[in-house]
Length: 319
Image 1 (tube, helix red, strand yellow):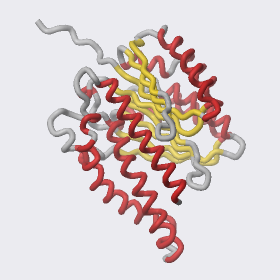
Image 2 (cartoon, one colour; image 1 turned 60 degrees about the horizontal axis):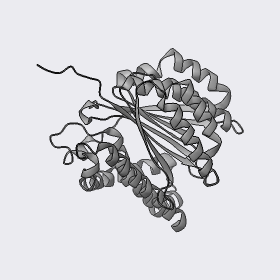
Image 3 (cartoon, one colour; image 1 turned 90 degrees about the vertical axis):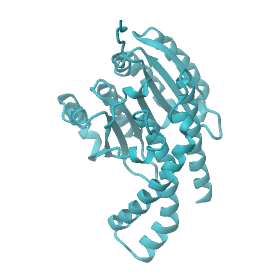
Image 4 (tube, rainbow, N blue to C red; image 1 turned 45 degrees about the horizontal axis):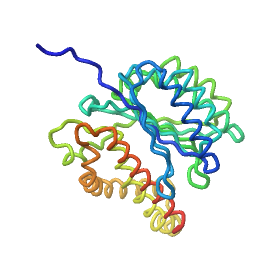
């Protein structure tokens, strides 16, 4: 007799960066948040990896729930929004949230993403961040959401706020983009923004991980994303500094659109060569041993985040 199927447990993996002067305040805030989430329906456990400077500068927080519905209810809950609003003055940099079913075969094989670039009116940044928290709460209820990433501007490098949303299918993504709830929120943001653009793209990374996943089904998309970024960032940075700016821009005076296109060709080619190599060295993390998934997922995400931080630090010093 077959046992009755139960919903797979779901983990919310969050990476967040805290202003150095607020580390102790954030630790107290996290303790209070832990007390709140323990009382939430479907909550199973929480694990924290605090920062370990100078390499690991992000907090990595894993919250596990009995089902996807329970996790979505927490993400969109008034309790969570109140906690996030209280922490907002302590945070700097990106918000990065992944919704991960704890069994890899539960992740659908055709994820799609939308990249939304928004220019915010000067002086409206704080109001826009508050609006982002509201729309994040609503989109967490959308069917098929697998995670989101929010990147603020970087002075002198990136002038726009960037939001990346990932869904399991294009139909679910378009349903959210065209939903009345989102359209109403976009109208609320109009007084805060100058322009906004969205682009839909399939992940397209699976072919780079075939050797790491020959027979065991689809790898978690958030892990593939992290490894691709691990290779892509230094390629773009080095090419832009040594080739793009001095040669294509200053010497050849190519239009920005042409220079960017040529840079993308080089970046895609080199990333395609390097990602299979790095995937082979992270097999222990891509396919964790049974019974140790939670710990290995956290350790791998923390290690890669530390490498991100080290690369940014080195590039800031070198360039």
